[in-house]
Length: 94
Image 1 (cartoon, rainbow, N blue to C red):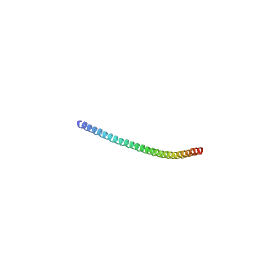
Image 2 (spheres, one colour):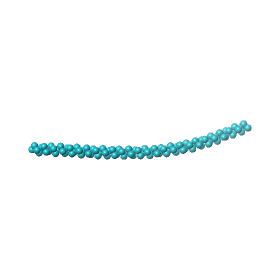
Image 3 (tube, helix red, strand yellow):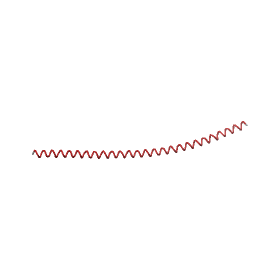
């Protein structure tokens, strides 16, 4: 029975080695899948941030346009007020 025992030990060792190799292969596949999911999450985040940046840039541009319009209106009103004051002063001095 010595040969049979030795053959069974070799078979058992071979089965354990095959199981370990299969486990490593599955771990490698799982790790690759996890990396793919993480990369997809990064890509999704990048797109969301790019969209937010575009929206913020558009809002800033619109705000700057409103600011320029308001600045022009304030300038016109100041010019009109200065003109009115100068007119009153010139009439009072005449």
